[in-house]
Amino acid sequence: MTTVLTSAPAVVRTVRELRERLRDYRAKAGADATVGLVPTMGFLHEGHASLIRRSAAENGLTVLSIFVNPLQFGPNEDFERYPRDEARDLAIAADAGAQLVFMPEVRDMYPTPPSTKIIVGGITERLCGASRPGHFDGVGVVVTKLFNLVQPGRAYFGLKDAQQVAVVSTIVADLNQPVEIVPCPIVREADGLAMSSRNVYLKPEEREQALILSRTLRQVPAWVREGATPESLKANMTASIAGMPLAEIDYAEVLTYPDLQPPAEGEALRHVPVPLLAAVAVKFGQTRLIDNVLLNPNEVN
Ligand code: PAF
Image (tube, rainbow, N blue to C red; front, side):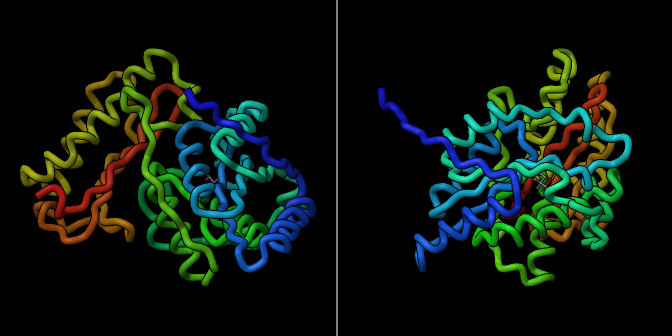
């Protein structure tokens, strides 16, 4: 058996301390300095750990940010009850190889309510952008602030939030932010449930029924191969999920990726020459879960 020795990351809670630590690192590392950023809202799981490990493998310094960003929650959403566990997060961060953890208070990130807005048009009109008005505006502001503070060469995001990856990539391209966005694969529990900090809210029966999301998405490549059109694929996904009595479907969609446009009606999806995103958002009780599969049409034919 090998023993893995992990050292505790430095924890900074203010913008000033963060900047000092980064300045020290860059002064020591000189031209070899490479900084990776993993932005999170904490309550870390294996999905986050995989992002941290990837960053640690590719950069001299990995900065993990943990900040439950009030700007991206709607008035009736779960900002207040969003799960938090600092000690557990720091243990996971250390084990995965983060060297610096930035955990600011709201008053540090937003000393005054920000007047500046980052609104990405087009790709936010569907999926979670439509269901959660203002959500991506809040993500845009916090991610841009984190990029400005940390100035990472690379930033790591999970593809469970595929629309978020598309939105952040658009902001980076539109504003010439000097950071490479690294999309990373969805990490699942052994039974297929996509890992999410919100899974902790699920009651046992809800969690059992939530497995229908990954089961449904696993069938998507076969449906596409068999000739599904956008309409029939959405109907198949909806019927499959609706078989679970506790499932309250927000959306079951198929769009081109990353521009998030509806494919032509009536056209067999296997002939669409660009990647497709089949995405679902479903509530089980009080818990809204999202999941998706990205399809490369060449791979399904
Ligand atoms: O994906 C998340 O956890 C959040 O949206 C992010 C990117 C950390 C911004 O608050």
